[in-house]
Image (cartoon, rainbow, N blue to C red; front, side, top):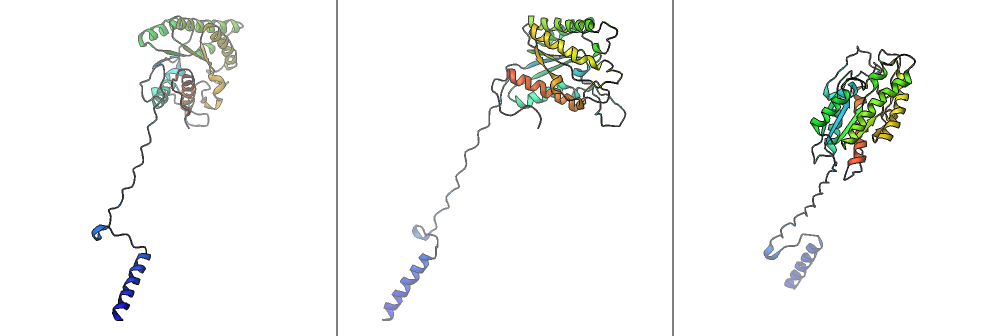
Length: 270
């Protein structure tokens, strides 16, 4: 009787142990090895978009060389800076390098402060820079210094003269099979020493649009996309943030025209 009760008790203990959720024992009383956690497949690195061009010449005056004006809200004394890091060509190259990381993009700064479209030798200067640097795109932004020198009743004739000189540059680029962006001038803040003819900017831009359309230039309407708040205290030059805006406008135009593998994101800084 005692042996029968012992066997029954042992069997009950084994059943209770099984119901308690103890881990299974492998052959020979050894626990099975833990199963490795599956390694997730790596996310493929997206291929960066590419441009069909890689050499860009920015040509013009101080708005290309990089002369800045401090923001209108700053009360400190004016301190104009012509450093390359402030210029829109420098900022444009940074934007393009970040987006088109699989290729080398070169932006050449052909801006000289104080230059006018009507200066003797300005067209030849452009020709020389194109010959020496072999750009696949020229960005032409010039004319502000010409407008600031307009006097007398022949204003319309002079504006047409300035635009005619821009036209000569555009026609030469078209003859060389070099695409050219023709940029309108940003708005000026009147009442400053270098903006006494600020009211002429819309007339100049209007004539520039007509010329670019007729002569094969690619109009980039900076004026329509650039707020006056980004023009500094001197009323003429953009702030450094303004030059960043220039770069973003040109970068978007380049993306729209020359990107061979468009991406969804915008080139504008976020």
